[in-house]
Length: 319
Length: 264
Image (cartoon, rainbow over all chains, first blue to last red; front, side, top):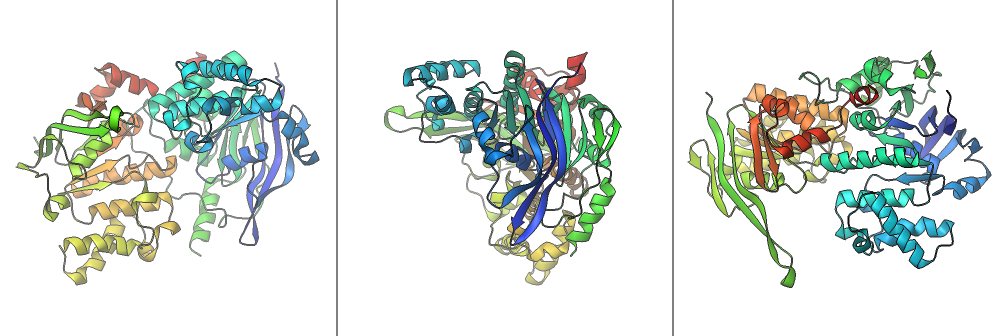
């Protein structure tokens, strides 16, 4: 059985202009999210995972631009016609949940209004209806006494509640795809577990697809079906079946990353730290990566290995 | 049996919150007892607001406690501490982006401590800086760098070097790795484990990440709403959690084999 791809990113290249020089921030990455599925986009800080999400949303900073490639939603190009199609589907087709709910929410606007802001844009609900819909949504994301809470301001809520509000706002217009940018990284473990459960339920009840960016592989393991591992603006290894990568990682970097994670299951052993951190954007090689190699259908790895990447980094960091 | 380097007996801390009509009191720590043996890494885990950082602040003397007793070896630590009292117990903070002075180079921020405490002859202080950098596995070339030019992992190493500069016997790591990337996190955890071996250091490791605690600590205390609900050796805590809250915490940690379990 094949399911249609709801999101298809192909040969995406993003260039950042820093101090008058162009640097390749994202180097020809391709991946897709199938209908009703969840893909985890994993990597260290600076590997380009958030930038990829922002490119899909059209939220790139002014010094960063997409130079080539395509991003298709339901087979239709998002990068064409000056983003007109994207504007149509933002909220109703694709929405996004950000990392820091305390930064992403407007501190001087009541939360009920923030939840239905996009809904009011896309429909002709009156104020009373919007309010009721907000209470509905708050109920759906598990906020107790929503009719009392709807007139609260963000400062009156805890971090976990704020993230629930963000999620309520993201699902307000019934999107088919939610882009998540580290939505649980700023939260406590117990609250994180609740938010992960909430996403699981959303997948089950509303059949939404997820593109989930995080550096926490444990969260990806709990929530996602497929995985793409990023390093230095490139995809290093990706598989439609996440189990394959976990049980038998192929690329040296994936292995190193998995070895660096403290696990609550499994034997107690010394972690293998990645001794070198990834080179910064201005120090990394500007050579284009060779195309990825398919090991088996739905499973690809990059054709340069971690040793090369490290070599390259040592060479540049001693300049 | 190794001897106890630090003991806390029935520590209570109460905060006043709100103003006027809303004024009330919060009991941040409620009869907390804690002990740490020589060369041991003891974990203190709990959620945000459980009181773990308040405990850390009480131990290093940044927060006064209302009642209870703190002992270093066999002597009580007074509420008002002398420089000598402060040297023995040092702390690493969570966020190396805010715990280092952005205007000070690595050398300056370590020298600041050595100068304040005046424990070394002046001419030996620079050598001590270099020695500390090699201890935390940083190149000497970073001596004149300022925080903005360093990565998160490097900054946290500098923070550790500062904490070690006064030869403390007891180190408190308050969420010392939670602001760092996974890959960097691993190397800092390894560094702490190495330092315990090489310096015979005792560490109180405060964290909400149970996977790290399981890896690093010999014993674990679980704290909830200012009360220590469980205290046991790491292995038995994870194999047979006695308290309901501990079970909830352990269940909340994402597991790598989740999918394997879900599909079976």
